Image 1: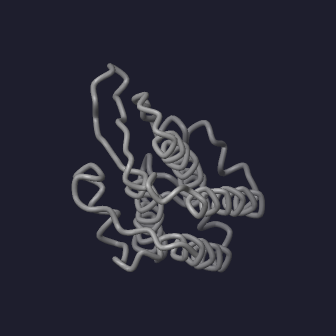
Image 2: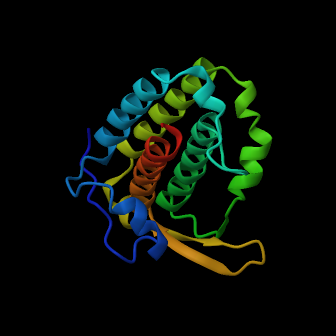
Image 3: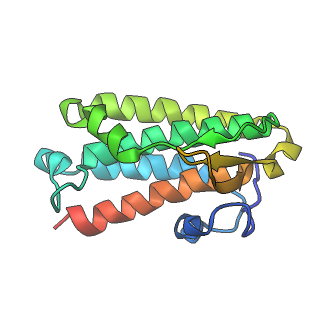
Length: 180
């Protein structure tokens, strides 16, 4: 797959270093996206069914809710990447991940349906980044809060790496806090 240089500081908000730090600086973010999807799928399918709806603390998401969160986040950040790549300068609003999780009804879904959706979204994301014009990767845009204030800026490649690192962070959380 295509080489995409890892973003430099300033191409993503400071808090995103927790995602960027999990990724190699090898330019193979698209390969990692596919490999990590397969690893997560194998890992989750090997879990006992009851673990999929387990909460390690009150108000924490279940593994199924985390998976849907990853899908939602990927869709939103890939959409932002498309807008920025096409040089759309319209500031884009953020989203309330907890509201999304609450209304996802993830725990009522089969694991098969979740991974069917996850794979479809992942393939679309990889294809989007695979065929973008090279010069679009350093274009960027702004995200705004509900009150209209600028919260952060990212480049297209910063968004690609965000998707990959965000997924790894949640995978690490699943392994650390849900599996005992």
